[in-house]
Each structure stands twice: as C-alpha cells, then as structure tokens.
Amino acid sequence: MRMLMTIVDESKKEEFEVFLNRSGVEGYTEISHAAGMGTSGPRQGSRAFPKTSAVVFTMLSEDALEKLLKKVDEFCASCGEELRLISWPVEVLR
Image (cartoon, rainbow, N blue to C red; front, side, top):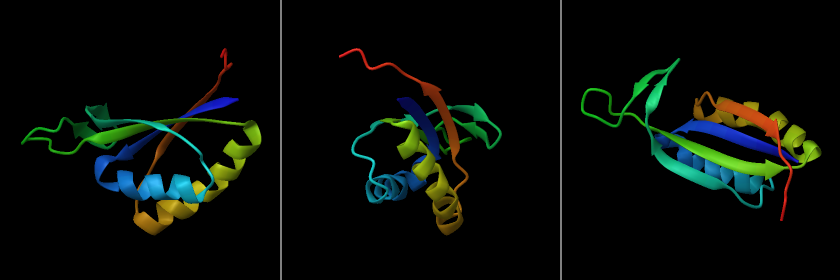
C-alpha cells in the first residue's frame, strides 16, 4: 500500500474531491486551511497572505496509485491547478 499526500489550493479543494471520487478513490482524510510557505509563496490565511491550502491523504494500492497519477495531469490541465503529490509506503496494522 502507498500513502498519497496531495497539497491543493483551498479554492480547488472541492474540484479535487470530485476528481478523486470519479477516479475511484473510496476514501480520504483532509486537513483544510493549511498554512505554510512553499514555491507558490506564503499561504497564511491572513490579510497580507490570504491563500491557504488543503492537505489530502489517501491510501492506495500500487496499481491504483499509478492509475490515479495518469489522470492527475488531466485534472491539472482542466482547472489550472498545480498539485504537489508525495507518496510513501505504508503498512496497514489493523
């Protein structure tokens, strides 16, 4: 199994959730209004830096992850979003 962490602009979060559902992802966990600093600049949810991100976690098989990654480019092209995706192996204990 793989854990996929996706960082998406908060304003594109709902579109991304629809994309996940249409791509066959059965479940995910989301952290909304994430603040930080990255290549897109500061995201603090403040007046000076009003944007925030959402962090979305899901667990997928290797095959499901590969299929999803092939569809990600289409999603990015359709909504103009540049996603940050990170994956690592996980062991489900229970």
